[in-house]
Image 1 (tube, rainbow, N blue to C red):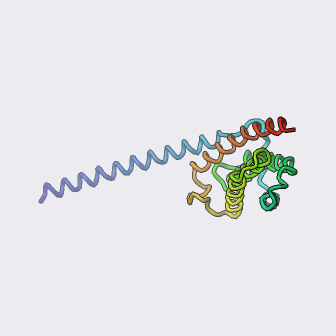
Image 2: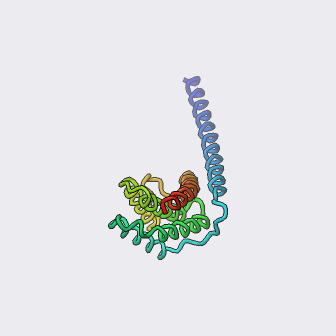
Length: 181
């Protein structure tokens, strides 16, 4: 009986030590992810704080374009302006934050609508609608569709990478639009 008691105490101490080290490792990893997210910023973009009223107006304007997709090609300059504004908001937003998620979602929606103007496929409209839903939810302070919300460090990295990817895609769209003129 004594041997099993001593063995049980030894197992509990070992389990406690393992949990302590695992928790410490997880904390260190999350700190590293948060640091990476803070460093993933677009160069050459001046940051501005998110204007919630303007963001809501952007959402409404893009939803109107979704309702009448045949007019999207007439509003490419507006979409380019929306994307530039959202890029500035993303630059100034904290990582992670609902503001960052809102800005990146708006930029993505504007990019998908611009892409629809170049290549009229329904997939771009669906992606734009999904991004607008994400922007509206983040603006209202709700959790993102993944269930984790824009408050985790991994979500911040995802948003920052998506923002950088969108910047590259905008450059490609500019070239495609020039070729189509």
